[in-house]
Length: 70
Image (tube, rainbow, N blue to C red):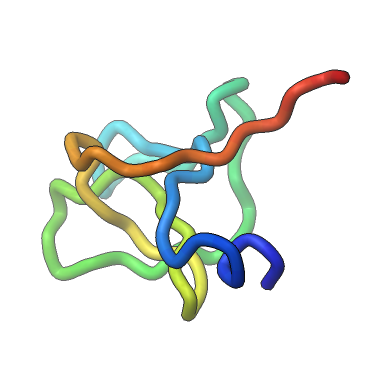
């Protein structure tokens, strides 16, 4: 909720090789939260939208969120 309040759409570091593969994080771990598939099978990156997680094009130029140690 916090992230959608400050930015309406962003990549969260989760993707898949194809619609037949599982969603994984940039660390290679399986992502277990629900991601709504778009109608296009080529949308293999997970985006945070105001209404939840949704698949989108990986080639899109978007802002992304990542975790850093301080």
